[in-house]
Amino acid sequence: QVSVAESGGGLVQSGGSLRLSCTASGSPGDGYTMSWFRQAPGKEREFVAAITWSGGTWYNSDAGKGRFSISRNNAKNTAYLQMNRLEPEDTAVYYCAAAPSSPLIGRRPGDYDVWGQGTQVTVSS
Image 1 (cartoon, helix red, strand yellow):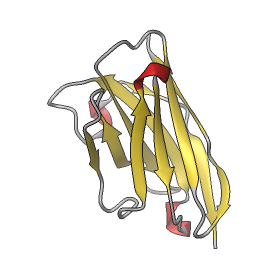
Image 2 (cartoon, rainbow, N blue to C red):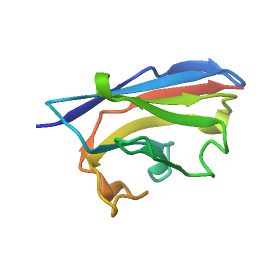
Image 3 (spheres, rainbow, N blue to C red):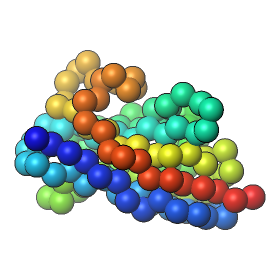
């Protein structure tokens, strides 16, 4: 059974950078799309970015506004979210999610069937 686990969250000052990691285990094999969502207190979970096995990417332009970049290392079964010029509004729990690649996978939480526990990102002003 495939599982994912996030790491790399923490406290950073406004304007700083963080790189989140998401490692899949349980022999995910080829073809898994991996994604990042975030949820701020009192708000709904929000799509941030996703990447296919072959490296195709899509982003939520409202989350990160060009400051975030998703990548992956298939040999390590790991996806990354590089976050630059962080702002207090980026404070949230960031979740990694994965699903077998499909043309139907998009930006909805329900598109993904494997979720991590989340990692807290706090940006101070």
